[in-house]
Image (cartoon, rainbow, N blue to C red; front, side):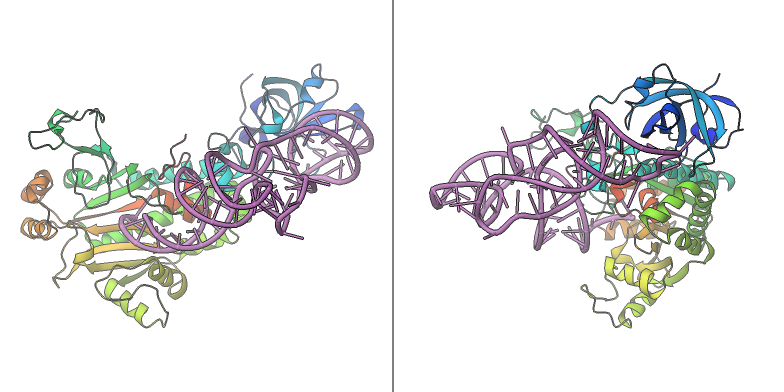
Length: 465
RNA sequence: UCCCCGAUAGCUCAAUGGUAGAGCGAGCGGCUGUUAACCGCUAGGUUGCUGGUUCGAGUCCAGCUCGGGGAGCCA
């Protein structure tokens, strides 16, 4: 007899014999009919546990009556219509085998009771046994698969860009160093500097902060590509929206401009959120009920309403005319602050907003210079509550303009020789963006802290698991 | 990194500078086709760490560690 998943058992044929394996969520006893226990069993395959009815005449009923939250068991039984309320079907057990006991129920870290997310972060190895985190695991998987499906259906190729990079000036933040040198006995050059020629790669190396530069090379041959992998930032950020290790989705499209790019980002968000609501309705109902009331309606609104497009220059005007007393000044040339983004997307437009064409001084060197000479073809997609969820641009495809921009930023064009080669050999207009996957999960689930949407969060002073 | 708040039972929190408590969870019993069950009983504590003030510190002071909220950096 095969092992049936709880998800399939709940939808199974009444009268069928089956074997279930999983973990006890709760056990309740009744003295009716000589005594019986009701076991809520889950195996992670769906939100709802299945009810197992174990009667007193089971040979090991003394064991069954000692089962506690967290015990692992194997159940053989028959799927029957439930006599009680709360579930359509249940399993009448012929046999219950205890696979693993909980050694000390009194100190089991995640009994079936309310826990704070702060506490569960300290029990990251066990928190996935709770409703919220198992739902999160399924939603995270579904969204990741939806992203792959979205791109696959549109002839994008998934490119595995490197995790380790030697580019130390991608302009996207502080980097983690990768080295095999002995920190207690560093080799030195005659000048007293660290001699990286003796390091593993013969030069300084780091964990990637973005796969963009590498994926552009594939874009300029494969036309439509994307990366989806881990990304690392060594900033000392202590917020509910930042991680030191997070996952980023970075599509790159050839023969495309900023408008194509914005449309791609909008289409992708709409596709994956719709897919999620359709295929993980059970988990999303939970998030809607217990995490953020009205979540599903808000996601539907995002799916059904075209995103607003506004230039940075116009956005500045909106902010100036808002009458709001912002903590940070609103002035053309300054980057939008969190309070500005929130006003635009939560109060003024009340929907996702694509802000485009930023002053060149506040954006990266690779963004395409607009004809006005003072703005670049960059874009940020802002969403309520989260802020920036996507950042992207049309890339500068003109070699002379690119070189000038690199020098303006105080960087050395030689360090980008292979990136510049793309502009020397058959250059094309192209564009792309980066989507913070965990920020998408915040949006999709209503969770407040980004450390609760990734299995094992890495943040300053947080690397226990 | 900056500002604010916090750390007491397995968890969530009380406790005027003077005998450390409750709810939940756990264990035992009662009741019940149970399902946020309900009723009774029981166990459970080096009050984050180090030092200081005091006759006396969970409580006041200083430093440190860790956590939370906000901001910056950024996805």
